[in-house]
Every structure is written in C-alpha cells, then in structure tokens.
Image (cartoon, rainbow, N blue to C red; front, top):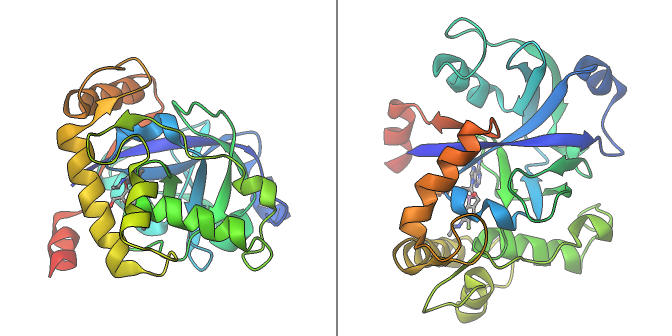
Length: 259
Ligand code: ZZB
C-alpha cells in the first residue's frame, strides 16, 4: 500500500507535553506525520488522532525538521530515503507519549480549517502507518464516530470541548451518501461507538468504494473532478509543496497483516 504521509506542523504543544520534549525540539520545525490513503480528503481535516498508549519519538528528518512518528515508522522512512540522512539511519532526539500530545495544536496541510488539535482515539494501531492519524469525519466513519464520542464525554476522555469543536467539512459528494458519507453510514449501520469495530470496518469499506468510484470533488483546485482523477493530483501537489512524502509499509509486514 502506498500511503501519503502528510506533515501536520506543530503550532503549540498541549498542556501535558513535558519540558524535555519542548527542550529537545528546540527551534526546529516539528511535524506530526500522518499516513493516509485518501489525500483528496485533506481539505476536510478537523483534528488529528493519536493512541494514548502508544510511544512516539521526535526523529531528525533534516537539519531543520523533526518528524513525530512511531519508531517503526521512523525506521521505515529511514530505509525509504525520506530523511536527509544516509539510508537506514534514523536519529531520535526524544521520546514522547501519545497521552501527553493530546491538546497539541497543529496545522493540517491543505486543510480548509487552518489550526486543529490532537485528540485521543482508542483504535490507533502501532503496527500501521505512522501511529499518527489525521481526521476527516466527513468521509471516515472511524473519525466521525470517534469525534462524536469525544464530544459526548469530554471529561472521560480528558479533553477540552473546544479541541473537538470543528464540525465535519464536506469535501466530496457521492450519489449514495451525499457529502457526509461517514455520518450517513454510521446512522445506517447504527454505529454507537468507536468500539463497534466490525460495523466500522464495513462502513469504511463502503465509504472507500463509493467515494473512489463515484465521488466528485466539492472543494480545492480539482473541484468538479471525479475523485479517481483528483486523488493523484492532490497527492502530487502536496508532495511538490513539501507538505507530504510518499510512505510505504514494508512488504513482509503487509503480508503478515493480511493473514
Ligand atoms: C484520512 C482519511 C480520510 C482516511 C478518509 C480514511 C478515510 P486501511 O484502509 O485500513 O489501511 N489510519 C492510518 N494509520 C492508522 C493507524 N495506525 N491506526 C488506525 N488507523 C489508521 O486504512 C487507512 C486509513 O486508516 C488511513 O486513511 C487513516 O485514515 C487510517 F476519508 O486518512 B485515513 C473510508 C475511509 N476514509
């Protein structure tokens, strides 16, 4: 699977980020890097998700840039030549936990909303992507359901309500589900919580297929184009502008995951 790894620039650390992390970051630009298969939906980013039990690190991507990802992702990036370092070399400047990142403010590339917050998601896998997930609740049922869970019980999730205040943003339209596929599918499949894993997997599959084969862009430079055509164009723009990098999972892991 070829992912697009989008660079969400850290604008302001959340209230729980340790002084060690802040010091280690120094004056460098820090990016929370999220792996997505839907670059054409990036206009609709409303927040970023991390797993609160996951371990992340700040890794040197170049002289001036640090990438915040899991160690597994940093290793993959190092072997894919993403870092301005010899192949296979990745240098961690500091550890950071998912829990302490909650409430951090980031800039989502191509986002219509320019500043969004890091929020907790229960199902974030350490074994997929970068462990950082960008949230598009208009088109991702997992993101929609998680955002609604957080809004219902902010105290339980230890978030400030204002961190979850950005509403889903329409980015593409499909004949079956209109411009809010995730919301429609969560209702149709009666999905009650982010823990309804089976129904969410089904909703994701339906949303992927309908969006890819029958979707039309509503926003951005490729407004009016079919999603199939817009997808590689948006991806290329993001990469050319230095806002994203290509990212692939190692073949052996991809195989073992599908067993
Ligand atoms: C933005 C986005 C917008 C996504 C959308 C999906 C959708 P797949 O097909 O199962 O490989 N993701 C990335 N990394 C992780 C992780 N570590 N743990 C949990 N979820 C993760 O799923 C790839 C998608 O899963 C990625 O694409 C990312 O969410 C999430 F409108 O990025 B996506 C219908 C789906 N729509």
